[in-house]
Image 1 (cartoon, rainbow, N blue to C red):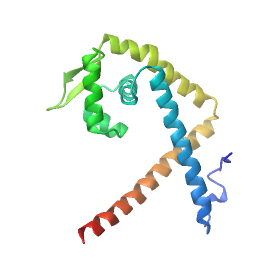
Image 2: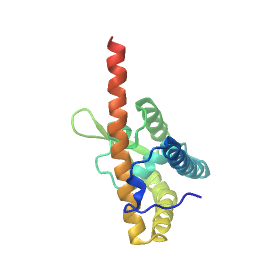
Image 3: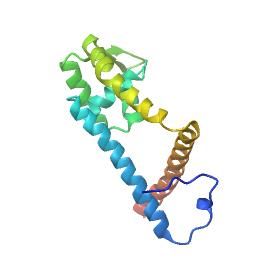
Image 4: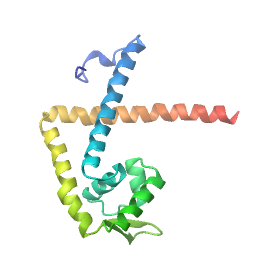
Length: 171
């Protein structure tokens, strides 16, 4: 098991052994994969593709201006995958498109789609809340703060690496 480390611990002190970082990275990646697996299993149980599940989940979050571009951006989904899933949901009568700003079209649940959100997606959201309720307020704050911090740092480092590759490709 991986020990929960307080932000005030000496974890941030200089570490000379990369093995410690790789061990932490491996454990975090395993946790992310397990989380993704949980949502995949739920989507399968609900007879939805992962992308369809994400679309309904996003609609459950009360996105008033959810268009395909925003869905791709917010959920890091490929445009073609989202387009195919939305077309499939439209064909099944579960969502429809409504004119939005400019050329965009908002994704809206039909009555049948709203039923899926109420009967299948909302119980999932409640289960997520129940899991969070089992943590102390301090644990929840740490979870959110440390996840946000790691994602921000990761973004910075990955952007730096991407720039190196771009420069190498230009030579």
